[in-house]
Image 1 (tube, rainbow, N blue to C red):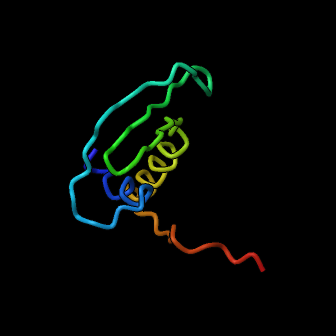
Image 2 (tube, rainbow, N blue to C red):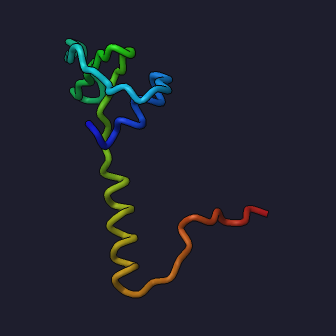
Length: 84
């Protein structure tokens, strides 16, 4: 969870440096997206609902970038294409 603590703090609008304290963790009975389940994280600072998602597309993109880099490909993935 520490990898996402900054994101959770932003969602909860937490500005202080007090540690997040998880008070409860719950799995809703309802499912979505072909049977995936989310979870409810209740902190002393507020509640966050997490919904899992398929990250296959991001993994494929990462794999393509890694393959191009391994082949010495030069590209600028940060610059948007000029649409004009």
